[in-house]
Length: 502
Image 1 (tube, rainbow, N blue to C red):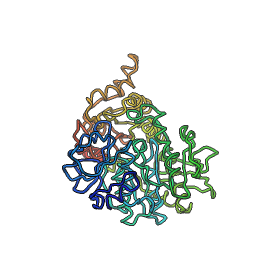
Image 2 (cartoon, rainbow, N blue to C red; image 1 turned 180 degrees about the vertical axis):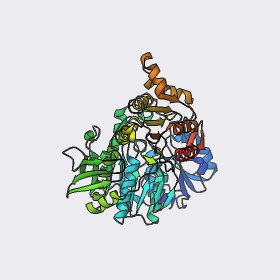
Image 3 (tube, rainbow, N blue to C red; image 1 turned 30 degrees about the vertical axis):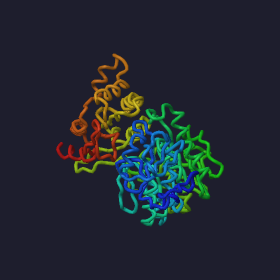
Image 4 (cartoon, rainbow, N blue to C red; image 1 turned 45 degrees about the horizontal axis):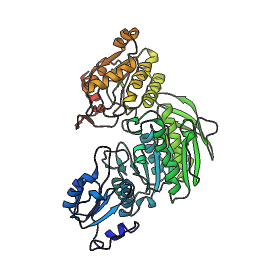
């Protein structure tokens, strides 16, 4: 694409000698800049892209997008676009550079504190059963038809997102389902995606280090249902909302959208009722706009029923029949790191789960407490930690939740990053140890072990055949971040190894 064409939608289109040059790429990281490329200076929370203008120019940038014209070196002779918000412009020109790939895909956006990953996998299963090749963008990875692409963010920045959508399209995708985080919405990473269907799962305590309070967190989510679908060029547009969630009931939905609600609530268009739940299967009755049917889900927990029902609604929004949606859900094989049982020859009940928020941890512990073999004399054991350099206010509540449900608790490290791991463990423990009166009970029930490998080994040594152990917090992750270094680490593999050595 020529420079002039890329910027023609903005005032002050370049009319100099550079205007007919073919742009080789757009970058917001000066390390990646190539000859004849565009550099967009983003002001982040820790780094200001304006500090790297000279570096970008020296590597061959012929156009700069900035917020502060005074920071542009005087010797630069290329095109400069000065804008109030470079994040917004990065999103716009990225979509333009890659040919607006979202316009040719059935785009589904899933937001909420918990359930996004599982819901995306369930949606993928339904759409693929309906012969709609679907690319997935989320926490575990980006993938399409068995091909996986690594990523470091749940919702990538606008450049990576638009490039990935174009890649999906080139590989034959007809749809994409993506996790849309509150960070992505606040930072306008998905503003140029014209969505067909958007989903709200729930909202609970998380990311308050970024959003400061729940109201701000909610308002970031609100953008998807008000601003983004208002500007979407697709028709029809569906907004699918969990009506049982108090924040879901407060969502304002833009007029162009068809509102579908789901939950146990009698007013929900997709209303479910649990018939029977066991450790192997959950049977539900689901009323939907075209009738009623029973579904046998190979999933545990009420929260997973919500995810399955939401996915069913998404499938119908894409024109897939209720019967195909049902068949896809009944044959679903699971999500990596989401209540994933650790395969072993000793028949031990050990599960890996990504639960890293108070609400998610409570959901998984309550599910296992209700269904596990502890009713036959076994124990529910939980191992978890909290991430460093992240929301500190959830640490105490997660300790309280573990104490409420589990018979034995291992508190350990989970990506301490640049924080002192002992401080994190102390703050989790403080949620449990509330008075001198429970000191004896605390020491009986809680084991604090900073080293996650040792904690897993100790928990595995303790577990008996009737017990259930849940290793929470990391799920699918295959690393542990200590300081600023990412070390290889896999809960599943560590648990398997410990079981073999038991």
